[in-house]
Length: 389
Image (cartoon, rainbow, N blue to C red):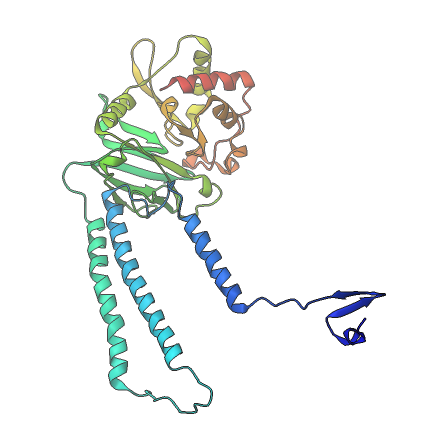
């Protein structure tokens, strides 16, 4: 064996055997940076591949959100052009005027160049002026009062649910259509929401149909929705976008965009009273409803003798056509017998609320309490409510 190998730093001798250990190559910073950039680009590309965008502002379903989207695309295009131009100028400057070995020439100084300073001050001002014109035009169009054949809906925010009243859709008794947590509107027609709150500030937000609008106690705010005809049949989720205490995250709602004929049929059905059952579990459930639920809930019912009356107190959601709703608990659960049974049994286990702070005399309710009903009473009440289609 050549003894010179004993002095080579990459050679280790074990008896009569030599192991050659080559030094590890350190990763190139440039290569690591390229990998990181590619990873970020890939992540963004994969995130943008989803076509299921129920609450995306980039998925417009109304005339109003189309205008917002057009403005966003215009500003994005201008900003992208500016970004690319600035980065190209930066790269050219770095490459062209970089320091070279053996070149000690001082570059030309432009400090105090009045003409250049005026130019790079005017360019941003002109860009902002160009962007301001379509921005203001869009704002004025969105804020303009609704005109023509308009459906009006009064929206009231409660802790933590939504009340929708249609003042122009009334029954023979003059009572307007009232529902909760599910807003039905016709496609191709403008709906104007007149909104307020009875307790704290809430915020109505359904991104594919409109921007956010706050609901402020003692004040009326307005929002226009004109769903595209192509959106007919879609169910679009919305939610409260202003923190309003315990149940804020579960203060949701759904907007049902109906074809005009389907909306008319739905409205006509909602104006009909719920039938008071005369036999079976639903009849026993009606006794429980009258003795317990009417402390906070209201319903328009038709008695067996044919008379129609409104029973209960309008503090919580109106339950006249509860069985026709797709959700319960402010749209946090699908309306099934199992979910309804669990909700009646112990609502606070399914949704954060504070029923211990309820003040019925003041009309303030912060959650549905557990009334301690027996399993049989709960089943009977479920049978009643689900029969009120």
